[in-house]
Length: 437
Image (cartoon, rainbow, N blue to C red; front, side, top):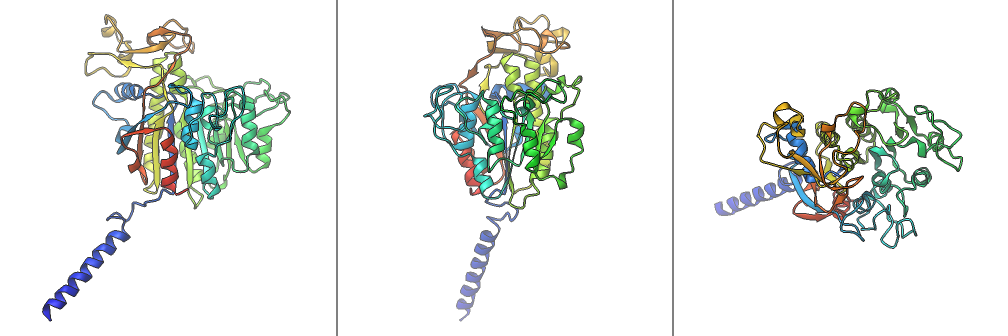
Protein backbone atom coordinates (compact mmCIF):
# COMPACT_ATOMS: atom_id res chain seq x y z
CA UNK A 1 0.00 0.00 0.00
CA UNK A 2 2.82 2.31 0.95
CA UNK A 3 4.68 1.54 -2.29
CA UNK A 4 1.61 2.52 -4.31
CA UNK A 5 1.46 5.90 -2.51
CA UNK A 6 5.17 6.52 -3.19
CA UNK A 7 4.66 5.57 -6.87
CA UNK A 8 1.65 7.90 -7.17
CA UNK A 9 3.53 10.73 -5.51
CA UNK A 10 6.58 10.21 -7.75
CA UNK A 11 4.38 10.10 -10.83
CA UNK A 12 2.68 13.32 -9.75
CA UNK A 13 6.06 15.03 -9.26
CA UNK A 14 7.27 13.84 -12.67
CA UNK A 15 4.14 15.20 -14.33
CA UNK A 16 4.56 18.48 -12.45
CA UNK A 17 8.21 18.83 -13.57
CA UNK A 18 7.36 18.03 -17.20
CA UNK A 19 4.51 20.53 -17.13
CA UNK A 20 6.81 23.18 -15.63
CA UNK A 21 9.44 22.77 -18.36
CA UNK A 22 6.82 22.76 -21.10
CA UNK A 23 5.12 25.85 -19.69
CA UNK A 24 8.37 27.78 -19.23
CA UNK A 25 10.06 26.77 -22.48
CA UNK A 26 12.81 24.75 -20.85
CA UNK A 27 13.02 26.80 -17.68
CA UNK A 28 13.10 30.36 -19.06
CA UNK A 29 9.59 31.81 -19.01
CA UNK A 30 10.87 35.08 -20.53
CA UNK A 31 12.34 33.54 -23.70
CA UNK A 32 9.61 33.17 -26.35
CA UNK A 33 10.09 30.71 -29.19
CA UNK A 34 8.54 33.07 -31.77
CA UNK A 35 10.00 36.51 -32.45
CA UNK A 36 7.41 39.26 -32.18
CA UNK A 37 9.89 41.72 -33.70
CA UNK A 38 12.98 41.47 -35.90
CA UNK A 39 15.68 44.06 -36.53
CA UNK A 40 18.12 43.35 -39.37
CA UNK A 41 21.28 45.47 -39.52
CA UNK A 42 23.17 45.52 -42.83
CA UNK A 43 26.62 47.08 -43.07
CA UNK A 44 27.06 47.78 -46.77
CA UNK A 45 30.45 46.47 -47.88
CA UNK A 46 31.34 45.56 -44.28
CA UNK A 47 33.75 42.66 -44.66
CA UNK A 48 35.16 40.84 -41.62
CA UNK A 49 38.49 42.67 -41.79
CA UNK A 50 36.62 45.96 -41.43
CA UNK A 51 35.09 44.74 -38.18
CA UNK A 52 38.51 43.72 -36.88
CA UNK A 53 40.08 47.04 -37.90
CA UNK A 54 37.22 49.00 -36.31
CA UNK A 55 37.58 47.04 -33.07
CA UNK A 56 41.29 47.90 -32.94
CA UNK A 57 40.63 51.53 -33.94
CA UNK A 58 37.81 52.14 -31.43
CA UNK A 59 38.54 49.73 -28.56
CA UNK A 60 42.03 48.33 -29.01
CA UNK A 61 43.00 44.77 -29.93
CA UNK A 62 41.75 43.41 -26.59
CA UNK A 63 38.51 45.41 -26.71
CA UNK A 64 35.04 44.39 -27.88
CA UNK A 65 32.48 45.89 -30.18
CA UNK A 66 28.79 45.54 -29.37
CA UNK A 67 28.54 43.18 -32.35
CA UNK A 68 31.21 40.98 -30.74
CA UNK A 69 28.86 40.27 -27.84
CA UNK A 70 26.09 38.69 -29.92
CA UNK A 71 25.99 35.00 -28.94
CA UNK A 72 25.28 33.32 -32.29
CA UNK A 73 27.50 33.73 -35.34
CA UNK A 74 28.01 32.27 -38.81
CA UNK A 75 29.92 32.95 -42.00
CA UNK A 76 27.75 33.78 -44.99
CA UNK A 77 28.39 33.18 -48.69
CA UNK A 78 27.41 36.15 -50.86
CA UNK A 79 27.70 35.09 -54.52
CA UNK A 80 24.90 36.11 -56.88
CA UNK A 81 23.15 33.99 -59.52
CA UNK A 82 25.58 35.04 -62.24
CA UNK A 83 28.75 36.20 -60.47
CA UNK A 84 31.03 34.89 -57.75
CA UNK A 85 31.26 38.52 -56.58
CA UNK A 86 27.88 40.06 -55.85
CA UNK A 87 26.66 43.63 -55.94
CA UNK A 88 24.31 45.15 -53.38
CA UNK A 89 21.16 44.60 -55.47
CA UNK A 90 21.60 40.84 -55.84
CA UNK A 91 22.79 40.43 -52.24
CA UNK A 92 19.86 42.40 -50.81
CA UNK A 93 17.45 40.45 -53.00
CA UNK A 94 18.76 37.16 -51.58
CA UNK A 95 18.34 38.40 -48.00
CA UNK A 96 14.93 39.99 -48.65
CA UNK A 97 13.36 37.19 -50.73
CA UNK A 98 15.41 34.03 -50.22
CA UNK A 99 16.13 33.79 -53.97
CA UNK A 100 19.38 34.38 -55.85
CA UNK A 101 19.28 36.83 -58.74
CA UNK A 102 21.70 38.50 -61.15
CA UNK A 103 23.85 41.51 -60.31
CA UNK A 104 22.05 44.80 -60.78
CA UNK A 105 18.58 43.30 -60.32
CA UNK A 106 16.23 44.26 -57.48
CA UNK A 107 13.75 41.64 -56.18
CA UNK A 108 13.24 39.87 -59.49
CA UNK A 109 14.45 36.35 -60.17
CA UNK A 110 17.38 35.28 -62.34
CA UNK A 111 15.31 35.42 -65.53
CA UNK A 112 15.84 39.18 -65.27
CA UNK A 113 18.89 40.65 -67.00
CA UNK A 114 20.33 43.90 -65.73
CA UNK A 115 19.20 46.82 -67.94
CA UNK A 116 17.79 44.39 -70.54
CA UNK A 117 14.60 42.70 -69.36
CA UNK A 118 12.43 42.14 -66.33
CA UNK A 119 12.11 38.80 -64.56
CA UNK A 120 9.48 37.33 -62.27
CA UNK A 121 8.74 39.51 -59.24
CA UNK A 122 9.81 38.13 -55.87
CA UNK A 123 7.93 38.66 -52.61
CA UNK A 124 10.04 40.09 -49.81
CA UNK A 125 10.06 39.23 -46.13
CA UNK A 126 8.79 42.75 -45.44
CA UNK A 127 5.67 42.12 -47.52
CA UNK A 128 5.08 38.86 -45.66
CA UNK A 129 5.32 40.71 -42.35
CA UNK A 130 2.99 43.49 -43.49
CA UNK A 131 0.45 40.95 -44.70
CA UNK A 132 0.31 39.52 -41.18
CA UNK A 133 -0.41 42.95 -39.77
CA UNK A 134 3.08 43.77 -38.51
CA UNK A 135 4.54 47.25 -38.78
CA UNK A 136 7.48 47.54 -41.18
CA UNK A 137 10.25 50.07 -41.64
CA UNK A 138 13.55 50.83 -43.34
CA UNK A 139 16.39 53.07 -42.15
CA UNK A 140 19.37 53.80 -44.39
CA UNK A 141 22.17 56.34 -44.80
CA UNK A 142 21.95 55.73 -48.55
CA UNK A 143 19.26 57.10 -50.83
CA UNK A 144 16.04 55.45 -49.71
CA UNK A 145 15.63 54.05 -53.22
CA UNK A 146 19.05 52.47 -53.71
CA UNK A 147 19.63 48.75 -54.11
CA UNK A 148 19.61 47.49 -50.52
CA UNK A 149 16.46 49.24 -49.22
CA UNK A 150 14.70 48.84 -52.57
CA UNK A 151 14.93 45.04 -52.50
CA UNK A 152 12.56 44.99 -49.52
CA UNK A 153 9.70 46.89 -51.23
CA UNK A 154 10.28 47.24 -55.00
CA UNK A 155 11.04 45.23 -58.17
CA UNK A 156 13.26 46.30 -61.08
CA UNK A 157 15.79 44.86 -63.51
CA UNK A 158 17.90 48.01 -63.16
CA UNK A 159 18.88 49.18 -59.69
CA UNK A 160 19.75 52.62 -61.10
CA UNK A 161 16.12 53.46 -61.93
CA UNK A 162 15.61 55.10 -58.56
CA UNK A 163 12.77 57.40 -59.69
CA UNK A 164 10.82 54.30 -60.78
CA UNK A 165 11.62 52.60 -57.47
CA UNK A 166 10.36 55.63 -55.52
CA UNK A 167 7.08 55.48 -57.45
CA UNK A 168 6.79 51.77 -56.64
CA UNK A 169 7.05 52.59 -52.94
CA UNK A 170 4.14 55.02 -53.20
CA UNK A 171 2.03 52.74 -55.39
CA UNK A 172 2.52 49.61 -53.29
CA UNK A 173 -0.45 48.41 -51.22
CA UNK A 174 1.87 46.90 -48.59
CA UNK A 175 4.54 49.59 -48.50
CA UNK A 176 6.64 50.04 -45.34
CA UNK A 177 5.16 52.25 -42.63
CA UNK A 178 8.46 54.05 -42.14
CA UNK A 179 11.24 55.05 -44.51
CA UNK A 180 14.25 57.15 -43.43
CA UNK A 181 17.24 57.98 -45.60
CA UNK A 182 18.41 60.30 -48.37
CA UNK A 183 17.53 60.85 -52.01
CA UNK A 184 14.90 63.64 -52.06
CA UNK A 185 15.65 64.38 -55.72
CA UNK A 186 14.02 61.11 -56.80
CA UNK A 187 10.75 61.99 -55.05
CA UNK A 188 10.27 65.57 -56.29
CA UNK A 189 9.24 66.81 -59.78
CA UNK A 190 11.35 69.23 -61.78
CA UNK A 191 9.03 72.14 -60.93
CA UNK A 192 9.79 71.76 -57.20
CA UNK A 193 13.11 72.90 -55.75
CA UNK A 194 14.81 71.00 -52.97
CA UNK A 195 14.35 72.86 -49.66
CA UNK A 196 18.04 72.49 -48.79
CA UNK A 197 20.05 72.35 -52.01
CA UNK A 198 17.62 74.60 -53.99
CA UNK A 199 18.13 72.30 -56.96
CA UNK A 200 15.05 71.11 -58.90
CA UNK A 201 13.74 67.60 -58.45
CA UNK A 202 14.53 65.01 -61.11
CA UNK A 203 11.10 63.50 -61.80
CA UNK A 204 9.91 64.04 -65.39
CA UNK A 205 6.43 62.59 -64.79
CA UNK A 206 5.35 65.58 -62.70
CA UNK A 207 4.50 63.49 -59.64
CA UNK A 208 5.34 64.89 -56.23
CA UNK A 209 5.70 61.64 -54.33
CA UNK A 210 6.27 63.39 -51.01
CA UNK A 211 2.89 65.11 -51.26
CA UNK A 212 1.23 61.85 -52.35
CA UNK A 213 2.52 60.09 -49.24
CA UNK A 214 1.46 62.99 -47.04
CA UNK A 215 -2.05 62.64 -48.45
CA UNK A 216 -1.83 58.92 -47.62
CA UNK A 217 -1.18 59.72 -43.95
CA UNK A 218 2.63 59.86 -43.78
CA UNK A 219 4.31 62.49 -41.64
CA UNK A 220 7.19 63.99 -43.63
CA UNK A 221 10.46 65.50 -42.35
CA UNK A 222 13.58 66.58 -44.22
CA UNK A 223 15.89 68.07 -41.56
CA UNK A 224 17.14 67.27 -38.08
CA UNK A 225 15.02 69.90 -36.31
CA UNK A 226 11.82 68.45 -37.76
CA UNK A 227 13.03 64.94 -36.96
CA UNK A 228 13.74 65.82 -33.34
CA UNK A 229 10.26 67.33 -32.96
CA UNK A 230 8.41 64.18 -34.07
CA UNK A 231 5.77 63.09 -31.58
CA UNK A 232 6.30 59.35 -31.51
CA UNK A 233 2.92 58.55 -29.92
CA UNK A 234 1.06 60.46 -32.64
CA UNK A 235 3.11 59.15 -35.58
CA UNK A 236 2.05 55.91 -37.26
CA UNK A 237 3.67 56.43 -40.68
CA UNK A 238 6.84 58.41 -41.34
CA UNK A 239 8.87 59.49 -44.37
CA UNK A 240 12.21 61.19 -43.69
CA UNK A 241 14.46 62.26 -46.56
CA UNK A 242 17.46 64.16 -45.22
CA UNK A 243 19.60 64.78 -48.30
CA UNK A 244 19.16 65.35 -52.01
CA UNK A 245 21.38 62.30 -52.55
CA UNK A 246 23.14 60.00 -50.08
CA UNK A 247 23.30 61.09 -46.44
CA UNK A 248 26.61 62.54 -45.34
CA UNK A 249 29.25 60.84 -43.23
CA UNK A 250 28.87 61.77 -39.57
CA UNK A 251 32.25 63.51 -39.55
CA UNK A 252 31.27 65.67 -42.57
CA UNK A 253 28.06 67.20 -41.22
CA UNK A 254 29.48 70.38 -39.70
CA UNK A 255 28.37 72.52 -42.66
CA UNK A 256 25.13 70.67 -43.40
CA UNK A 257 22.46 73.38 -43.68
CA UNK A 258 19.51 71.18 -42.80
CA UNK A 259 21.28 68.85 -40.42
CA UNK A 260 20.86 65.08 -40.40
CA UNK A 261 19.96 62.66 -37.61
CA UNK A 262 22.54 60.01 -36.82
CA UNK A 263 22.04 56.33 -37.54
CA UNK A 264 21.50 55.80 -33.81
CA UNK A 265 18.83 58.52 -33.68
CA UNK A 266 16.99 57.20 -36.74
CA UNK A 267 17.08 53.61 -35.51
CA UNK A 268 15.80 54.39 -32.02
CA UNK A 269 13.00 56.61 -33.33
CA UNK A 270 12.01 53.95 -35.85
CA UNK A 271 11.76 51.36 -33.06
CA UNK A 272 9.72 53.74 -30.90
CA UNK A 273 7.22 54.29 -33.72
CA UNK A 274 7.00 50.72 -35.01
CA UNK A 275 6.77 49.15 -31.55
CA UNK A 276 3.37 50.78 -31.06
CA UNK A 277 1.93 48.03 -33.27
CA UNK A 278 0.67 45.26 -30.94
CA UNK A 279 1.40 42.66 -33.63
CA UNK A 280 5.11 43.51 -33.68
CA UNK A 281 7.41 44.87 -36.38
CA UNK A 282 10.17 44.18 -38.88
CA UNK A 283 12.87 46.84 -39.24
CA UNK A 284 15.82 46.86 -41.66
CA UNK A 285 18.69 49.24 -40.83
CA UNK A 286 21.46 49.82 -43.37
CA UNK A 287 24.61 51.88 -42.99
CA UNK A 288 25.90 52.45 -46.50
CA UNK A 289 28.93 54.50 -45.45
CA UNK A 290 31.47 51.64 -45.08
CA UNK A 291 30.93 50.79 -48.74
CA UNK A 292 31.23 54.34 -50.08
CA UNK A 293 34.39 54.94 -48.06
CA UNK A 294 35.93 51.60 -49.03
CA UNK A 295 35.35 52.26 -52.74
CA UNK A 296 37.58 55.34 -52.34
CA UNK A 297 40.05 53.65 -49.95
CA UNK A 298 39.07 56.30 -47.40
CA UNK A 299 40.07 54.26 -44.37
CA UNK A 300 39.11 56.81 -41.73
CA UNK A 301 35.54 57.18 -42.99
CA UNK A 302 35.23 53.42 -43.39
CA UNK A 303 36.20 52.96 -39.74
CA UNK A 304 33.73 55.63 -38.66
CA UNK A 305 31.01 54.02 -40.75
CA UNK A 306 31.45 50.61 -39.14
CA UNK A 307 31.74 52.22 -35.70
CA UNK A 308 28.44 54.09 -36.24
CA UNK A 309 26.72 50.83 -37.15
CA UNK A 310 28.12 49.19 -34.03
CA UNK A 311 26.93 52.11 -31.88
CA UNK A 312 23.45 51.69 -33.32
CA UNK A 313 23.55 47.98 -32.44
CA UNK A 314 24.63 48.89 -28.90
CA UNK A 315 21.78 51.40 -28.57
CA UNK A 316 19.25 48.82 -29.77
CA UNK A 317 20.49 46.20 -27.32
CA UNK A 318 19.53 48.58 -24.49
CA UNK A 319 15.90 48.98 -25.59
CA UNK A 320 14.77 45.63 -27.01
CA UNK A 321 13.35 42.77 -24.99
CA UNK A 322 13.51 38.99 -25.38
CA UNK A 323 10.74 38.97 -27.96
CA UNK A 324 13.03 40.62 -30.54
CA UNK A 325 15.36 38.85 -32.95
CA UNK A 326 18.44 40.96 -33.72
CA UNK A 327 20.58 40.16 -36.77
CA UNK A 328 23.73 41.94 -37.95
CA UNK A 329 25.38 41.19 -41.29
CA UNK A 330 26.80 42.66 -44.51
CA UNK A 331 25.74 42.37 -48.12
CA UNK A 332 29.33 41.85 -49.33
CA UNK A 333 32.92 42.91 -48.72
CA UNK A 334 34.30 45.97 -50.51
CA UNK A 335 37.93 46.75 -51.26
CA UNK A 336 39.61 43.74 -49.67
CA UNK A 337 41.01 45.43 -46.57
CA UNK A 338 44.20 43.91 -45.12
CA UNK A 339 45.55 44.41 -41.58
CA UNK A 340 49.33 44.14 -41.73
CA UNK A 341 51.71 43.23 -38.94
CA UNK A 342 53.48 42.84 -36.70
CA UNK A 343 52.38 46.03 -34.96
CA UNK A 344 52.51 47.22 -31.34
CA UNK A 345 49.62 45.96 -29.22
CA UNK A 346 48.94 49.55 -28.15
CA UNK A 347 48.19 50.61 -31.73
CA UNK A 348 44.74 52.21 -31.55
CA UNK A 349 42.79 55.17 -32.89
CA UNK A 350 44.46 57.23 -35.59
CA UNK A 351 47.78 55.53 -34.85
CA UNK A 352 46.28 52.67 -36.87
CA UNK A 353 46.25 55.05 -39.85
CA UNK A 354 49.89 56.04 -39.34
CA UNK A 355 49.24 59.65 -38.32
CA UNK A 356 51.41 59.75 -35.20
CA UNK A 357 55.04 60.86 -35.41
CA UNK A 358 56.29 57.56 -34.01
CA UNK A 359 54.81 55.72 -37.00
CA UNK A 360 56.19 57.89 -39.79
CA UNK A 361 59.24 55.64 -40.30
CA UNK A 362 57.23 52.45 -40.90
CA UNK A 363 58.21 50.62 -44.07
CA UNK A 364 54.61 49.53 -44.75
CA UNK A 365 51.13 50.62 -43.56
CA UNK A 366 49.11 48.76 -40.96
CA UNK A 367 46.06 48.96 -43.23
CA UNK A 368 45.97 48.52 -47.01
CA UNK A 369 43.42 47.67 -49.71
CA UNK A 370 43.49 45.08 -52.48
CA UNK A 371 41.95 47.51 -55.01
CA UNK A 372 40.99 51.15 -55.44
CA UNK A 373 42.52 54.60 -55.95
CA UNK A 374 44.74 54.31 -52.88
CA UNK A 375 46.32 57.57 -51.72
CA UNK A 376 46.33 59.20 -55.17
CA UNK A 377 42.73 60.42 -55.12
CA UNK A 378 41.87 63.80 -53.65
CA UNK A 379 40.27 63.77 -50.20
CA UNK A 380 36.46 63.67 -50.05
CA UNK A 381 36.21 66.90 -48.04
CA UNK A 382 38.33 70.02 -47.71
CA UNK A 383 39.41 69.27 -44.15
CA UNK A 384 40.47 65.67 -44.83
CA UNK A 385 44.15 64.72 -44.87
CA UNK A 386 46.05 62.29 -47.10
CA UNK A 387 46.62 60.01 -44.14
CA UNK A 388 42.91 59.21 -44.08
CA UNK A 389 43.48 57.10 -47.19
CA UNK A 390 45.41 53.83 -47.40
CA UNK A 391 47.29 52.40 -50.39
CA UNK A 392 45.91 49.75 -52.69
CA UNK A 393 47.49 46.94 -54.71
CA UNK A 394 45.28 47.12 -57.82
CA UNK A 395 44.94 50.74 -58.92
CA UNK A 396 41.39 51.59 -59.95
CA UNK A 397 39.19 54.69 -59.74
CA UNK A 398 36.88 52.73 -57.44
CA UNK A 399 37.64 49.66 -55.34
CA UNK A 400 36.11 46.33 -56.30
CA UNK A 401 33.80 44.13 -54.27
CA UNK A 402 35.23 40.77 -53.20
CA UNK A 403 33.86 37.26 -52.76
CA UNK A 404 34.98 37.05 -49.10
CA UNK A 405 32.38 35.52 -46.77
CA UNK A 406 30.75 38.00 -44.37
CA UNK A 407 29.71 37.74 -40.73
CA UNK A 408 26.17 37.10 -39.53
CA UNK A 409 25.65 37.63 -35.79
CA UNK A 410 22.39 37.22 -33.90
CA UNK A 411 20.53 37.31 -30.61
CA UNK A 412 16.95 36.51 -29.66
CA UNK A 413 14.21 34.06 -30.71
CA UNK A 414 15.38 32.03 -33.71
CA UNK A 415 19.00 33.13 -33.36
CA UNK A 416 20.11 29.53 -32.78
CA UNK A 417 19.73 28.98 -36.54
CA UNK A 418 22.76 31.24 -37.03
CA UNK A 419 25.73 28.87 -36.94
CA UNK A 420 28.29 27.29 -39.24
CA UNK A 421 28.42 28.28 -42.91
CA UNK A 422 25.28 29.79 -44.42
CA UNK A 423 24.16 31.35 -47.68
CA UNK A 424 22.73 34.88 -47.75
CA UNK A 425 19.38 33.38 -48.80
CA UNK A 426 19.22 31.75 -45.37
CA UNK A 427 18.71 35.14 -43.74
CA UNK A 428 15.24 35.31 -45.31
CA UNK A 429 14.45 31.83 -44.00
CA UNK A 430 15.75 32.58 -40.50
CA UNK A 431 13.52 35.68 -40.21
CA UNK A 432 10.49 33.93 -41.71
CA UNK A 433 10.80 30.96 -39.37
CA UNK A 434 11.53 33.07 -36.30
CA UNK A 435 8.49 35.30 -36.89
CA UNK A 436 6.30 32.45 -38.13
CA UNK A 437 5.48 34.32 -41.35
